[in-house]
Length: 261
Image (tube, rainbow, N blue to C red; front, side, top):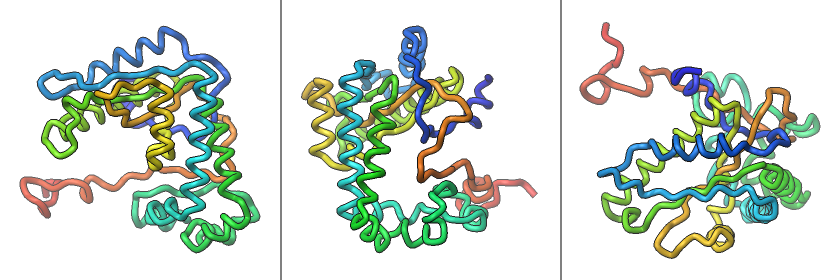
């Protein structure tokens, strides 16, 4: 797979992974490729924790599932993310962004637009649907063969100063390198986002992984090997659509058509 194929084939993995440990060769390859990311003055502000211990993975899965339940029950999930939900091919064609919720239980399909809203979220909470989805989240994370946590040194990651921005740009390059490497290796990757939205839950993971005081843990991903026919979650989506280059870019100054006439 060449670099262009890897970029175009990169996807977030919403399904479970194959029940197979990630090889030591591939773990070393992932770290090596992550370390090739650019950084300001070659500061290399990142450090990684590769988690393969099943006990730790199961604990983090429980934290992720509990976080999902809390975010959905208190309404934060719906308030924050409802603007990204798309429910039809027509909407996708019109916006070319967001997530297309194309896979839902048959009984919910006629009501999915209402269900996936702040008002519908309150109904779902009464029906204990957040607990069901939280359990799905827990099982996805807990069943992963490997997790990959990224921290930045606080010597560089200064939130209100330029080095903080530079280090975040660098971490973005690290993440892209990891995503392209997993794609090339026949692996999948998904951001475990729910715990980082609840500080006390995030701190549980930070403490578990023994992250030093002079580092800030900013992201954790699940990784594993994939195959095309893996069962999709009960509620799932696609997000492969992209805006046209004419919508995304301009030539010389804002508003000028990028395509030369």
